[in-house]
Image (cartoon, rainbow, N blue to C red; front, side):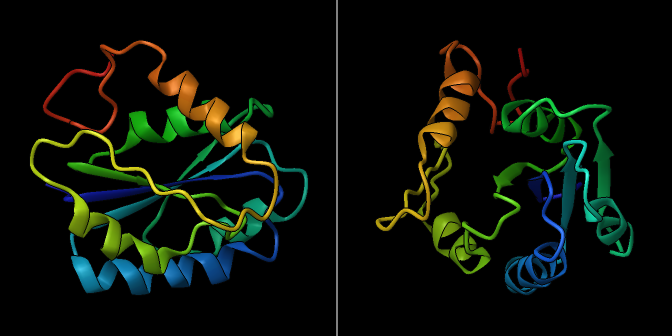
Amino acid sequence: MVEYSVVVPIYNEEGNILKLHSEIAVAMDKISKDYEVIYVNDNSNDNSMSELKSLNNVKIIELNKNYGQATALDAGFRAAKGEIIISMDGDGQNDPKDIPRLLKKMKDDVDLNLAEKEEKIDNVKGEWDVLETLLEDSKKVLFDKKKEFV
């Protein structure tokens, strides 16, 4: 069984993907060898898909049109096999080096662990909209694979 799934939505991230993937691999290899990385290409119109296809040992989900970050995350969460799901932005705003620190904070009874950057690179309203969409039904538990995703 896969212990961790890292889900990364991608939209026009040419030039970011290879570096980000390398950083994810370094961070995750320190934690466990039992992980998967899932990239969800949200119908990028640059060379993101070519860069994704050059990566080894990853799952790639390609959406047929640009649905937005919430749908891309949902597709990745549904495909994830890990007991714990870690989501990251494809633009490098989330530092993979933070993954081990976040996981240390988790307890057995925690369904969701969030981190917020003190210094924001851009408007995070969109990110909070995604979170609100994912959590709007309090019966949904997205990160506890022991419970059914509704």
